[in-house]
Length: 265
Image (cartoon, rainbow, N blue to C red):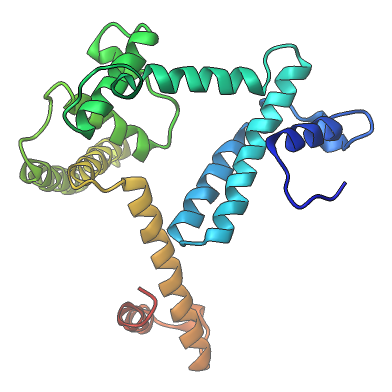
């Protein structure tokens, strides 16, 4: 069964075997719901491979993501719902329909107009009648991504700052409101602090959008940087003959500052 090159058709055949009575019990037991988290996990692993500039890793992770599409297609085929060719057909029809400047004679000036037309056609297809409905018409994305997209859609109708200065001033305003809510929380008004922190995060995302920075990607990079610097601290502490839990905060902070100027950036 070994081949040098496998096609999509080969993967479909393999998945059909895995789901058959002679296949794998685990694969056969799965449903759309039981493997839905895998789609999210594999998508994030694709992003991680891109961030690491890992070409081989990207090939592998894109394959894992493709597997999820094939898997769901096979489940749907067995249940008489649809198959992979229904997916590819709808996708190709959508690509042609939403690119009238390529496949028809519609004239566009720039990429922004292309994106605007794409969204306009998308919401027309979904029968979304109002601008508020456009903001509500959002999948259950992680909060950073969802806030980014909501702000992006609101900006398309002119509800936006003239420049990034307005967005940065809003961050300052929300920051001071967080401080105020903490100062006034003698009775433990956690909900008020939560509300103000939410507003601050929302404002930071808005500034990110203005600067063409994806907040999800930016935060993920910050997390990875934190882990690398923490690793540096742990390695250095071992060389010093000390355990992290026995070090003072000042000692760890000194190593942290050293990590910032080291290769762990």
